[in-house]
Length: 544
Ligand code: 16G
Ligand code: ZN
Image (tube, rainbow, N blue to C red; front, side, top):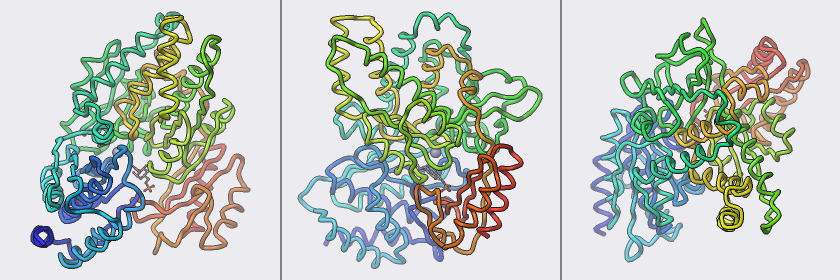
């Protein structure tokens, strides 16, 4: 009863904006920040309920990633540090859109019953609250706290300004019962990075791999954090630009660089030849690029190429480890997960390396789930979001082998391979794609290989591609199948698209409704840029 009146009272303080319908979408609620207080308050309640149900710490992150600074958003991290279970998404939609406190309470009542959540006498809710650098973040965190603490016994733990992956990492660490502060996060990535750097093969350490890296911080949290972190990174000299003075995501950041294929603000022709990287607004995406001389154009090294670099390195470490004679063998499964946006040339390259490649629909939750099926699952979206997942079974085998090798053949190639793999599993974020730890892994591997960014970029040549968006009356009318590669409904559309594709050499094209914007997206690829443009345009006409 006390609980009910607390909920009724607090929710009356956070009325939903009239006439706005919000949806949890691919990656949480996003909207103009001024519309979000009520939603964030309600997601706070939801997070507390999820914490009670799972008996674990839950995360709540306030961010709108690469979107403009006036937007904001909110999403939940589940006990594993991954995305909120998809089973709860419809409920998140329902409570966000409940018109008044009474209907909200009714929905909560029904949901608590349906999900068997014990509000009294069970475990108390604990929710970690993080936010990016958006000015609207502080007051939204307050709204979230109000929501969380409506639930009797619940605690909101404000961890301040963090990157999205740091918050996910902390949730995961807390639930594993290990040290989970921001300091421990840095400690873990710096230690494993230094370890990998110290293990560099001698023949490569003398090669001329530039140790200089310029990073575009998108004027967001990632740039700010990296600027503080960089002094503890051995063998790497990082020049961080856009770490907070300019407007977040405006002409900067991984999304801008990847989509526009031009230099971010603060970069220019004088940076030509130097390795550059760009983070997005909440530092869960990473792309590399090099500036072309005498222009504002770039050579983009996207998520597909980061994935290829990781895959190549891990495959090699596994091969070396497999050569061992004195250890019990374990056939580790290595799988690669992409979406339909992966450049066709990358998929072909990975398959030709002998790797198993699978496609899933767009959105981290789908890729992550698939990658978790392997001993080592590498996933990346072309836009730069991705990570590497290691299975518990494989990791404990690896720990044993590493110990064994360190007593029988310390310093051998096998021993190094085993410890490199262990270091990668600690460096790379096991909860979600993380631009900071991804960047350090790229840097370590480039040094291992003795490769310049140019050499890396030449692994394969991207096929020219074009992306367009189309405003339609109802984007939900477009239903896709087979990892978004075909349109299932309305009927007839796919046949028409196929007929267009058939006109082009290496033609590939698909359409899908966006999960974050009210548009249908078209992606086309072909052997020349003109052909890719023209294929995209003719398919746009079909969808219109
Ligand atoms: C979200 C997704 C990202 C996806 C993008 C697609 C997460 C954390 N983020 O940003 O993975 O690439 O949406 O947007 O899942 P779209 O549906 O508008 O094309
Ligand atoms: Zn992001």
